[in-house]
Image: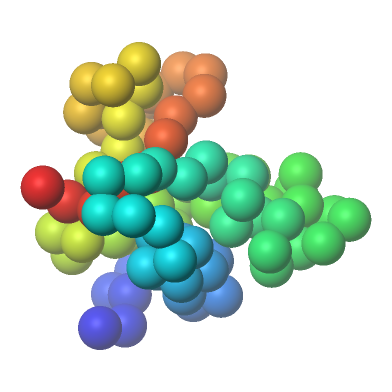
Length: 86
């Protein structure tokens, strides 16, 4: 399913691919998607990667967690993880 907002489709696809390659209960960091898409320039893609995660939350595909608890990626401060929706 394509993203319905302005989320970078490359990052949306990267998050999906990274999670598909992991065991069902494992998480990824948004930086992994940013690195996969941006190479050496990945840091500038951190907020777009979080935006892509938010898009996938809206589609019901993923959850964003912090310290193991589901959080709203739009308001979470600090490091977050992304996992498949449960």
